[in-house]
Length: 76
Image (cartoon, rainbow, N blue to C red; front, side):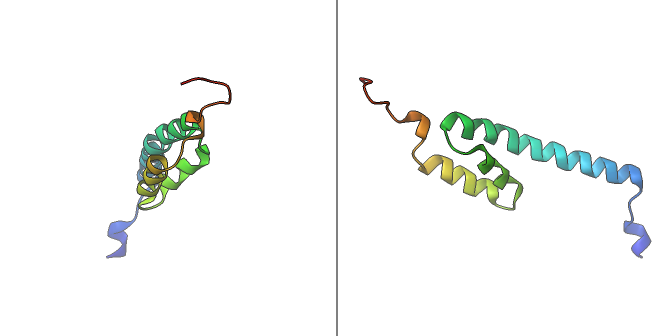
C-alpha cells in the first residue's frame, strides 16, 4: 500500500520545481511592493506560510508607507 505513494527522483525534482515556482510567484511581487512602499522587503517571506499572504496584505494595506511621508520643506 505504501509503495503506491512513493516518488521517484524525477517526480521529486518536478515537485520541488513547482514549489519554487509557486514561491517565486508570490514572494517576488510582494518583495517589490514592500521595497517601493518603504517597508522591510523581508516581510514578503511571510507569504510562504499558510495564510501568511493575508497577513502581508493587511500590513501593506493598513500601515503608513514611509516612502509616502512628506519630506520637510516640500509643499504638497
